[in-house]
Structure formats: C-alpha cells, structure tokens
Length: 152
Image (cartoon, rainbow, N blue to C red; front, side):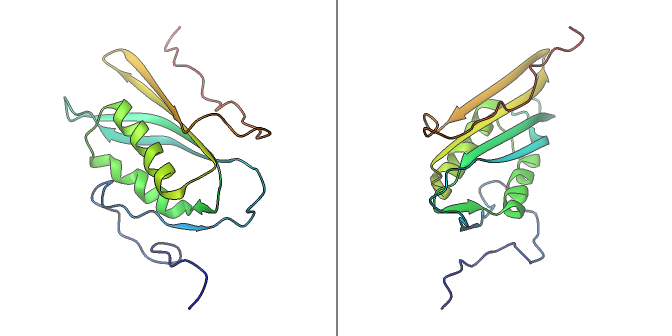
C-alpha cells in the first residue's frame, strides 16, 4: 500500500458537487512539514444565494493558512467553493463555515478567512474568522482587499 493519500479529484474528471455538504475536499501531505509558511487562496468571484430573496450574493474570499501535516488540494477546494452557487446562507454562516470546515479537516497550524461581500440592500458586509493568533514568526500580509467604497 502506498503512503500517498488517495485523492478523489486530482487527475480525475470530477462532477461539480450538488451542495457544500456533498463536496469532498482532498488533502495531500505537506511537502515542507516543519517549515512555517503561509498559503493564500483568493476566490474573487465567489457566489452563494441569499436565504431571504434567493438571489445571488457575491464575495471576494481570501483564505490564508499555515500548513500542518497536510495541504488542501486546489481542485477540490475550487469544486467545494463552487458548490455554494446553489447554497442558501447568510454571509456570516457561509464565510465562517468554510473556514471551520477547512480547519477541522485539514488541521492547519493556523487559518483565517476574509469574506468581502458586495452590498446587499446597500450595505456591504465583511466577515472575518481565524483559528487563533498567528504562529510567532509567520509573515501574514494584509489580505489586499480594499473596503467597499462604492462611489465614495
């Protein structure tokens, strides 16, 4: 038996999951275990559905994490995030839920997520969550998403 974890998506044709709950995230061994470094994923065109109106909500998500023993495989993350297109949820629940699922399954040394949601009802909503304080010595750059200003 190989020491390499079985992946469901890498190198395979994968159908989009019907829901975030059905999405399977793949994790592979961290190639730099013992090294403190940051990984950033940006999803500037993230979409979910408003639970009140059923209309699409749009966000720019930024996920930063310091890997532990594993890293998330990017294709499976893309499919997971895409599964929210037909998922109804408030901005807070969606953003924090994504961060918590990644933290629970991947067990990184540290993780944070910023959800920069475009205005709904004229009010932009930004949602932030992290697992705790960043490890000492970890370089954590600003997420680089300016606050929504509209015509301001």
